[in-house]
Length: 98
Image (cartoon, rainbow, N blue to C red; front, side):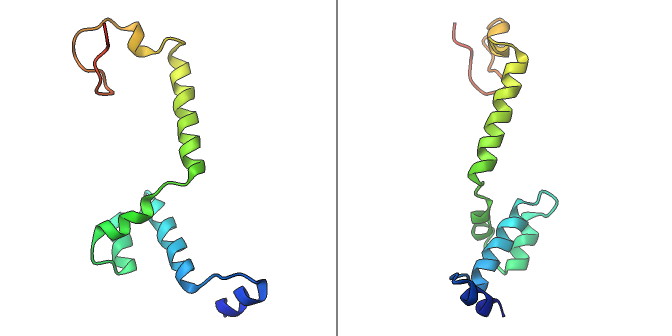
């Protein structure tokens, strides 16, 4: 049925395309462990299932914009510039430069 519908629409979609879509959506669900997705897909190795963790460009952009907004909420200089350098690493893992 799916093949006939795709042909009628002039699309080249296959059932395997639907499998990829389902795998990608399941892998992105924070409530569904990746090991469960691996089991559903029948993958022998978790690394095969991890291929579906690639983020969508729109999600990356939204995350970066949210990060940028959080940085501006701290102040124009940023939290690292407002604190004295104690020689210890900051939460980001980098030392403040003198």
